[in-house]
Image (cartoon, rainbow, N blue to C red):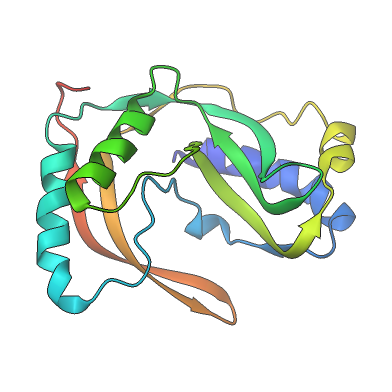
Length: 176
């Protein structure tokens, strides 16, 4: 994600953080768009998983996107995750997530929503009024390009998740 977009999210969070004290905030350098979460993958399955993702991403062209508003899963009244939405107007990201699920044999998500996870909550929290109070968020509305997928290894720790790239899958100029 371009630096200007990242900074616009950070600016919005400066105002929100004091009003959402129970949040476990993710680090900006860790923000990423998750197309598919695989969970624990045995080492011997990794080569096959990489091949399947490669097949799924073939023919995927660059995706033009932009930031949307903030929201929460499962809802703003019972938030477990606070997120920044990533626009998917042509459903290319959803289609790619479905293709990755089909090729890898991992079932697709029932309700895919392109997003960046900003915070997590141990217990459900109501964040709707806080978000509404700070609207408009002034997130950078300019478009940006998503031009690759990356398979990452994540390790949860006391300081949050640490991510290590395992394989990259550049998108071609053609596409979905």
